[in-house]
Length: 446
Image (cartoon, rainbow, N blue to C red; front, side):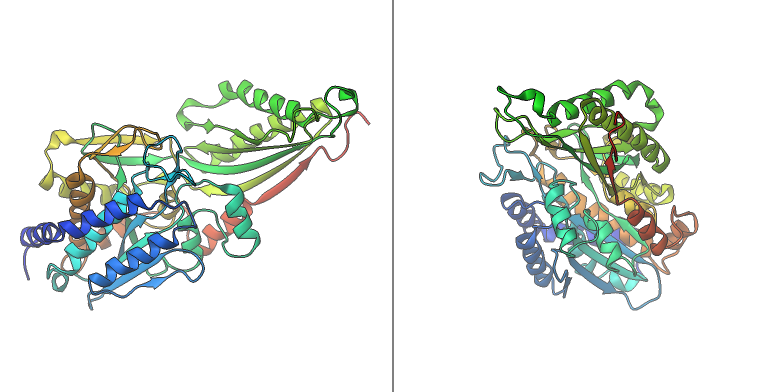
């Protein structure tokens, strides 16, 4: 059996040997962006790449998803390396799709390049005979929590259960043989490698204010203005922001998706979408009550009604400390200590948070980008870092965990306490978050 140093050297060399394939993957996905649950072209492309490596895949039957499992033949935990396939929508970005506005201003194309790099480094380097357990390589859909109406339509048709890709795959059993998961995410400008500690979770909301239409010029007194009711509800949300505890990192950021039909008719149907984000499940649920009161107040003040639909978003993220330390030690082999940054708590949300409630996970950051995530100035400037180095870090971390009898992976698992004791408990909680309310039931003034 080779020692760990030899193991890492073989992986390093092998990933370099597959450099062209890795870069081709990242560039191709970048040029063909697709949003969540629409990534069928990307999914087919990833199947082709895995087959070029001599591997067979399973795919989602009615959603885009790809999974490869490599069994070492020796007992041990299952370690999954993930890459997300979806893009965001940012029409102002110069590389966005002119029809859809989709663009990989999220860096997910780099994740898929790193996924192929990690897969090649582990499968083609000859190190598998020194490992125990299973390796899983997964291209997953729909991490960006966007196009909520489209996804709710998929849910109503029975195609999906959850709006986020990883929760959906958990419900479908794709993670039943996975014990530890990891992936890498695009970093903000000026960072080579970042170590994340935790992140906000979120609850999604769809709100509909219902009024009464009438002629806006000739008979406004005969209407009930749903837009004014919505405006008052949004103002009330702003008024309660000072009640949000700073340490809970609450974020509420509504958008109006429909403000009326035509200008000379009093708006009777106004739609809003928002998230309620927070550091803990408890803070999210408590803040959601405050937000609902604010929204209802706007309706009551105008004599309108409001429908509030709560939708499970993502669980708060908590990285496994023992797993983070393993990754950090690997990172020190490839970059200088001064190039590693500790990012603490993220105010954003990801469905890696859901996985973190049932298994140990990490989601470190990788550099090679300029500009701001999800913005029109986001760009990849260093593919050697964003694509190639990212693959090496993931592959070496996975090999480190499963080396020998996989004692390192077993230690990580022994030191992990899940939020939910079982997949069923997690799914039951997620399902309980689907709630529709209509207020007021009766006009409080009679």
